[in-house]
Image 1 (cartoon, helix red, strand yellow):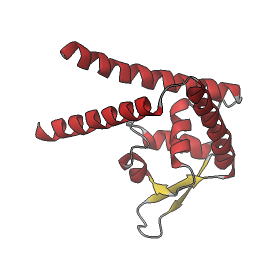
Image 2 (spheres, rainbow, N blue to C red; image 1 turned 60 degrees about the vertical axis):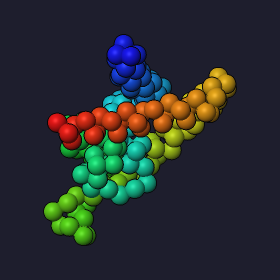
Image 3 (cartoon, rainbow, N blue to C red; image 1 turned 30 degrees about the horizontal axis):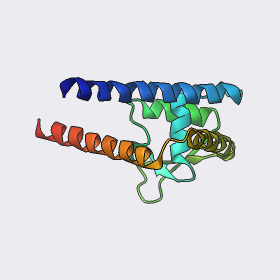
Image 4 (cartoon, rainbow, N blue to C red; image 1 turned 180 degrees about the vertical axis):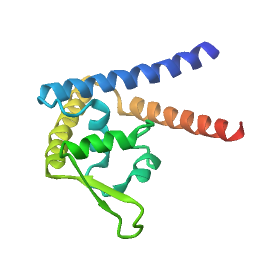
Amino acid sequence: MKDLYLDTVSSIERLHRLFLEVVKNELDRQGIHDMNNVQALILYNLGKSQLTVSELTNRGYYLGSNASYNLRKMIQNGYIDQEVSVHDRRAIVVKLSARGLDFYKKFDAAMNRQVTIFIEKNIPLADLQNATNLLRQMEAFWSEFLIRR
């Protein structure tokens, strides 16, 4: 059981790294060199929303420790606009700029192409749902485990 558990955990890490490489390849394909793969995922997850930096991390859109750095770079490169929140003058709200929306549309099209290819591989939807359910159970387990410690 322990070997299977550890293999599953290792698979999660490998899949995440592979997906980051897929995103990097897509950036290269589109000729985008002023954004990295992590920033692309932040931008994509932000989508058409307007969120504070803390909301980005609380919703799981960004899991790293340097969200502010990545947001600052995307603001400098014109992908994200920022403004002071009308509800809390201490908070900064971020949203996609026109350039960010353009990137979002292109990246969304790339994700749609990936989904189409994934479907063509005849992987049963039930298998994908089971994998998602298992990953959510593991996330809940680890969250609970941390709270108990």
